[in-house]
Image (tube, rainbow, N blue to C red; front, top):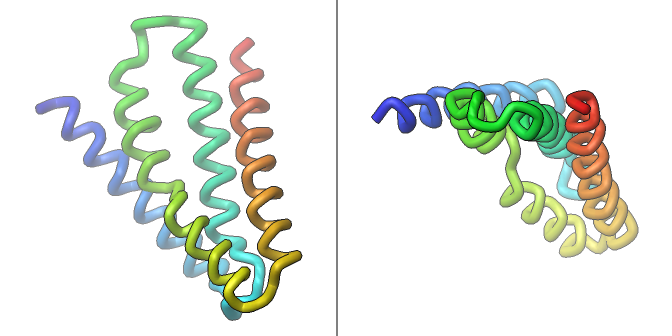
Length: 122
């Protein structure tokens, strides 16, 4: 039960932060860059990369942190489903170059953020 509470609390905080970022960076229409989702996904990727590096350097020591921050917080903060929907909306609205840029840049930025944060632990 303790593990479920950690995931629940982390997910709640991550979801609230995701909502707050969305209010700070609202979309101006279905044909604009989805900055809030982009930022949330990059930040969550960086946090998860950092945590993964920490765990790999000290195996077995950070199970509670993994559940609270990795599974819960990052799971609540990042949002692949919204990323997918926003990419689809850009395509549906004829914004093909913007859609491709958004999908590629977000994926690369998240990978880079994860790698950079993971590298800090080495």
